[in-house]
Image 1 (cartoon, one colour):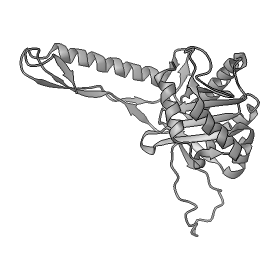
Image 2 (cartoon, one colour):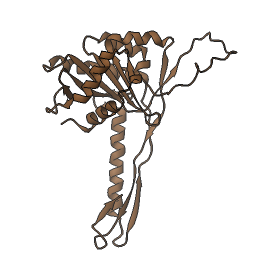
Image 3 (cartoon, one colour):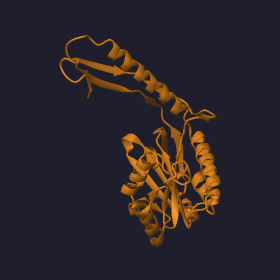
Image 4 (cartoon, helix red, strand yellow):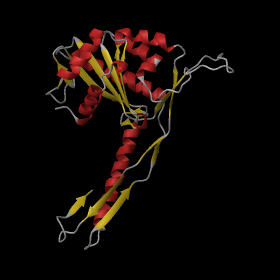
Length: 269
């Protein structure tokens, strides 16, 4: 069976197959996507491409990051692992220092760590390199691939967007709701650079689904047919600018510890 991350992302997309999340898609394309998520089953070969298989194609999941990366992986992932180790060490120390009698409530929290290595440039590089690596796996795949879907997930919550307006726009007149602030979370359907990129790779993959679990701003899903990606670009006019906000991570927990003579041992809440 596939891992928890793949199953989680698959479920998010399946719940949000709304027309407003489909870009440059015909009615027939919509039906292909809906059928894929209704029929697809996890690949029984857990370590092999792709993650999910349906009658006429596949769904392959991968994660991209806006953090810096090297041979050891993404900086943010390593920093989060360190935070988790710190949390576990504090939990273990807290348990070791529990009094011998009485019910004790223990609270554990790590220090807050600010992740400082995020940028749009890192994100675009991660997107391209992961895309191309999975195309290499696709080229070796001998199963059904009439309809190929890359399900690309971003969970860092750092990348934000802002709509660009013409520099010569008059400032002393009203524009109704045309200047209304949009959801600032990043969306692939607003990114001219990467829309051009997936159009260039249209012979490799038919559909790209981009999933952004953006925390406070909700989960955003963009379903794009790569062959028609330039049709989206036509509508973007001045386009969008992208930047990364400062984000931080920490872990905390509260536990109730009950001695053996008062209950069944340690109980967590």
